[in-house]
Image 1 (cartoon, rainbow, N blue to C red):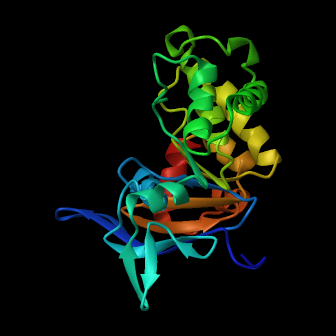
Image 2: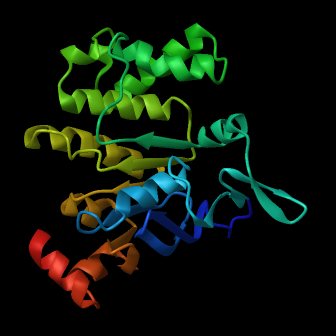
Length: 256
């Protein structure tokens, strides 16, 4: 990847479910080290866009490029073809994903949840996997909860374990889909604090969120979506104080 090439480039992706067009030709560029926050009303296509980035949803049109390589597709005689599942799985290792729900294995401790993928997918030996996992639990402020099961943890703690689990694969890019929306309000801050720290450390992140203060303070780039299109994008301070588009103004008036 050359230095002027973006880490992630989304080229005119569209997605429909039946007759409903959820994404209408979205293009977006994310540079290494940048935090991009995507905001907008419910049903605007934000989560679908995020899921198209790592091909959990397959776009009907358009291509997502990670480090210049098409995601989930490969070139053959100047045409793009679907990758085999194994190839896609290997490519997905570069993208960590954190969902609204925590998706932890209920029968495994916090530590076991984190070491699972590195040991199985990357063939990391157990001692190294445990060492890394403990360091990650430290990073998310939960080292003392290493041997707790998900049911013994609060929602905020489970989400922090889920973030640590994603980081265990050493992704180049972290995708967050409304990571705090399932949490009680008093637990939101602890998850956002972990995400702020990741941003400070230079982790490239794409975050679908309704936490506007977080978006204003942490994002390098703010994207406002409505009706399956990017209506407006730019530096958060600029977009929030001086939106150009009527739809952006209406949305911000409701949420700020």
